Length: 395
Image (tube, rainbow, N blue to C red; front, side, top):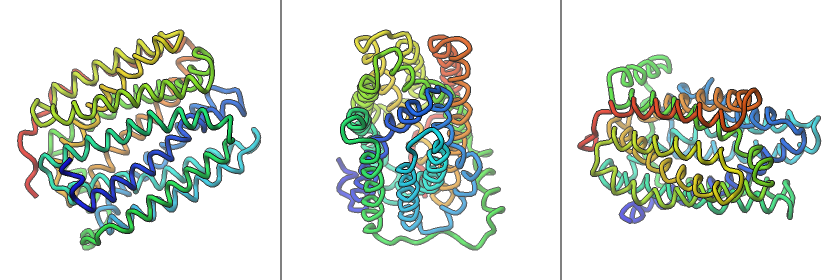
């Protein structure tokens, strides 16, 4: 792949791979740990919601800082902060220590608020905005798929063998290795520090108001992720109660990873050939079907194909959204725009992570899946209005 010929991209991709893999080791383990400590679906859902509180409060301001700072140094600092935060999970050993889990997740997420827009904004600087960019985004999607495929089930299986603390230490190590790799990247010019934070924030919001493609992607992404989060918060408790325990939950996560692996190369081809609006809409409709099939399952035989379907369509939606946004946004405001997108995702996930379990307790997981399906179809209809991105942005 052309992107891998670029040294700085290889380092950034390797850092992201190590970091994401370490994170996925705890994707099943942390909510399962909370659920086993408390027996509460809402407590497990709150663990997911806690991760998205900092982006809701700090997201746009973090984007301004990312555009002002050396993005390489910002990513290194964010990884070190995330490593320190995850260490707190080692001290959550009984229900009275549950607050430590939420503190750890909030602080870790604060690092993520900086890391994600910095990495997203730095990628076009490293590889450009042509076809290499869509290939780089597709490769990142493959990375996510592999992490889901290997990390989640491995974490779910190992938590009962080597214990929760060992998995926490593995995640800490992954963040520190990632920081070292990013520190090895080439130094590049920092952002413009001449304007005030408020002025820069207003400039980023003004760009979103004037750029129809970016604005449409923000709305579609936010609505869809609210639906996705409502079901993500239910997945671990649903898997434990309906599918048979932590192990099946990890296998369902691996099914999502298989879908990502299948969808990434397909979306890499389609994103440069088809109109972005219909392609994104189709991916969302397929995802909505997968939602209903997964939460209607009573065994792994039916749950796994549904998870693969969700992963495949989700991979396509991710690549289309990220590539289109990076191509229509000038690099000098891409950190701010990416942070606003992340904030929208955080608000949606925070609301969805609380609303999904609440609705499921009032009704059922299947009814919640139907509601999420309806919301996703609405997002798909709106996605058809996304203007096509025929040419990469010329910076």
